Image (cartoon, rainbow, N blue to C red; front, top):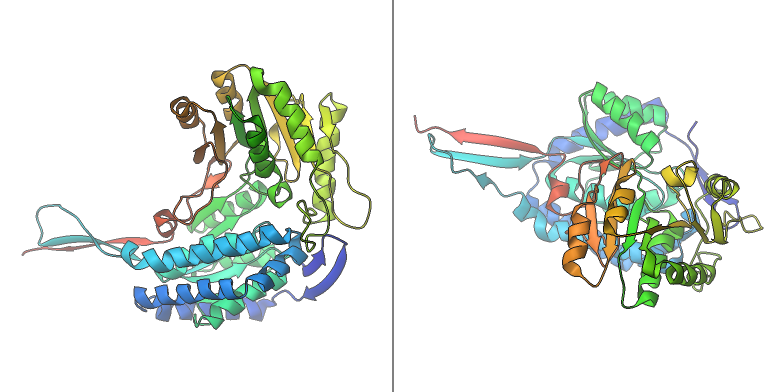
Length: 458
């Protein structure tokens, strides 16, 4: 049974609990967003854009309140929490600024008729199943483009972020979005499956684990519903060469430990060529060991807790498995004593295919460094993964770095930066990292009816 409650991961204290929907609540939510779609779909793009602009403004005005909420609920340090609020506001503003133009008719140069145009129309009520690791940003990626299109939203957030979920719903309604255009639902997984099957729902977007994505995709496929999935990752950070090893180590530390390492596109595998390997590992070890772990509401904290004790226990099991089978532990590797879900920043080398850390996603502050002979070996190791979300290549030779980046089997490849997220850049992966794209024009190209209207001369 899904339970929605705020449990402070820094001390294990239960702050507040919330009831899940009953059968009547499920029906009300479905009926509401279906009815709301009939009205929201015919509002002008300019009106929808202005509503999203108000949402962006309110996120800015209420930034401290929003940041503290996710620091409390999932353990994000305040500085990072404020950054997430700022990014979320930028996403709503992006679609406010660009949405109307993205919805303009596309005229086709096809003979035989007076006019052939493609219109971008909404399709109906959508379900969003969102994760706890970026509570506002993940919702913004899904909600902003689809509200701009004229779709309506049923939003199931992670069970450990209920107060943040309610804050988002409140802000939408404060911005004068109709209450039946965005409805927060504290639903169970079983209720979500039933709702996906309901004919009033036209699609579902999930960001989360591979297991959850498989389940949702199966239900959606069985009911012929469109699905977008952003799932796990085992992203690489490839160091071919560097003329500033300290700066590259700093970037690797940030790419691995931001959000306590709880990001799908974090740098989970760091590949370093032989000439730089020893010094890089030594400096990265020092950098990891210097992180300041503590209460996420303390401004001095740079590494907060994991989202739950279960998450911390799972990560420790993966680390222990690697060490027991011969991996070298350079720093960290333990839970921190006390009631919170804290794990030390951990660095491993010597990880081999028989260890869980080689093939499984490490969702926490644990990095693995591999020594590679050259770019070809780096590419082969990078692509030896079931995941394909993103990866980065670091080098002073930009042409060579781009050549390597283009050979990575990923949805997003970066040179001399890692995991960059901006409203105008597409986000999504290949292989078991998911299907579909979010953000930018591509985010408005998923749950849309690309409707042909052709007018004959006859």
